[in-house]
Image (cartoon, rainbow, N blue to C red; front, side):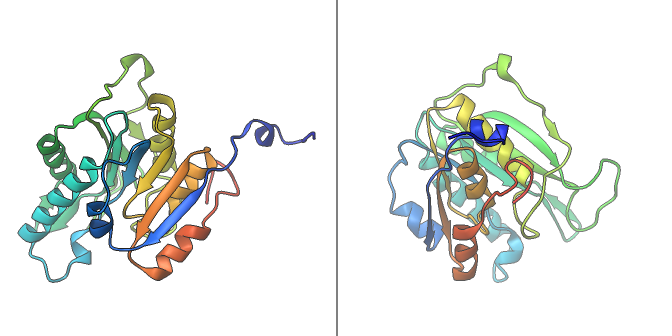
Length: 231
């Protein structure tokens, strides 16, 4: 069979996808180390826990990040996409909170990228103009000869306001492909499933967990018909 589309000829076969409608913490607690997997996720914000004080949410966040990290095999990586918040006139650095959890779990920081959510120099209110993209591993170490840009000029298209942008997903999934033997991506807080769709488009299998039935249905259906450009 021949094709007139060069990208289609070279593209990997789409990976398989499974989305569990479940509580992420309960699902993770029921798993051992996820052999053959790397994890890419964005954890819930303080705004999603109206009954929590800031201190209670910080404690939850660090413990949950530690649980996510604990399920990553030594030959895999865990990537977090997190946007800081401003609360009562103070700055809450989620990059620091994730790093705190990683140190407790014995995972090293391989790289830390800044993902621009708005053009450089633009003033934003409530949420900063950038997000953190942090990659950790217990067994893998960064190869400096294969370094990539520390700043992503744009996050890429998102399916909802708290979603992970397509360009950030691509950066994370491509790193997994190029630097680990793992070929399944797990997102325990998968939302609308952008991470899963990007992983599948690159030929990786994907497993998502989402508490909302509505978002879980979207996560099962989301596709990347334009390849690397948009969902």
